[in-house]
Image (cartoon, rainbow, N blue to C red; front, side, top):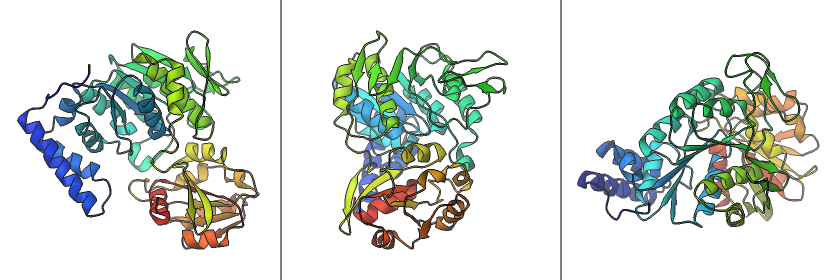
Length: 412
């Protein structure tokens, strides 16, 4: 179903043109990519524009608390084996940003779209996706996105009766409960390192039993479905039991899990696992994440961690002590203004690392590290932290706006 050459009405064309003009002006003024403000203007002129832009595309939506930007990139790379792809690669994942991305996709066959968890149901309603990938749900921005069980219920209601193939993580009970309302689910054993949001049954509230990698509710019988795809060490197991090697330039087990889900999505569109996984090797960094940059004659690896589950995954992939670690936390609108999540992170995993703390909420973080019995220094800025850090590559872990601040400072 590749691109219809001119599917848009005059009003829609005007909206697209105006949105692009506003985005260009925003970029010229140095205010970022302009995709969000451009999309807002376009949707103001034509409220149905997102649906119009999506109607000639095979749409794939990707949603999760963690990993959706990276997985979107991996899926997009895999699907390029089958045709041109448009994607919101920079992570503008609410309707305005998605609209801006699709406005540039008139010649594409596929649209691979990262969607903020809160907006998944609405975007799915507008874009009529062929496939929806659901990776995980955990606590994040509680002041904005609501409690995880409520988010799972929102997904469950939005997916009920959906025609899309839902590719879902069988190891996350919240995701399984949300996806189970859909008639066509492909289950992937992608793993779940962070389990603190999934100890009670989302179906009945009973206590979840977790023997080994399995899980089930002893009260109502809600249980882990049998997966047809699985991550097994450094391989993806397909539905036929064949093992395909994962070769990624991105670090950590979480990205292997993202690759497994991405291979399952690619297979929905006829791209074989071997081809999909080979293409994923092209992805070196995602919007600056995992980049190693030079700053003040030092190597800094930039790592994004936005919530407890993300910090836990990130701690698992940093170099061992005595590698210096810089931590930066803000609490601006895009981060969520509630920093109570800091108390859910196990900072004892940083024992032995020299730690340097900065960001708008450096004192909140300092209190948390003090309670965790860690040795650290509070710094005014990145320059001071780098100057004081002992030799060797520095691991820099930051939440969303702090990460953007750091990228600007190092010129990345």
